[in-house]
Image (cartoon, rainbow, N blue to C red; front, side, top):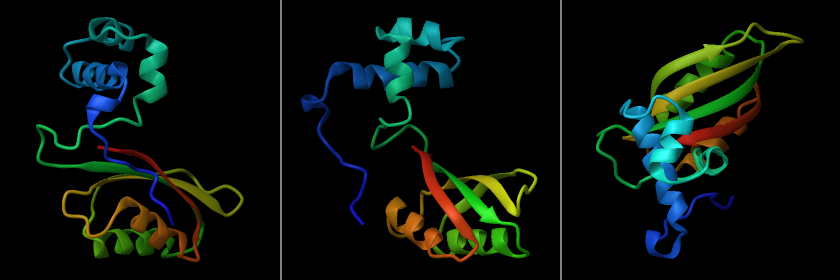
Length: 145
């Protein structure tokens, strides 16, 4: 499975990608009260912010923790979520939050945020491991920082 991620030097990227990160940082530090204000302060359009906000990240941050958010659709079977959590634990991901919808048509949507600081392997390896589980109908990496 080919990775969806690349590490490239910012010198070859358009300036607005770094400004998207700057706008996101302004929001997280509460220096901007809205996306409109953060985008204006960073010198980009709101459209540019929304288009790239979930796709550009710094390789090193000021925080010591790295996080990822996974969205899954699970079969409504006893132990399905427990197996997912076990797999994440086996790969040294620490669960931060879990949000699960009420099962409909024997399926439940689950969003899991995890600390990936000590992760063994890659995000692609996590996706592959989760996809191999019988109770996992679909899994998607929503964000990583």
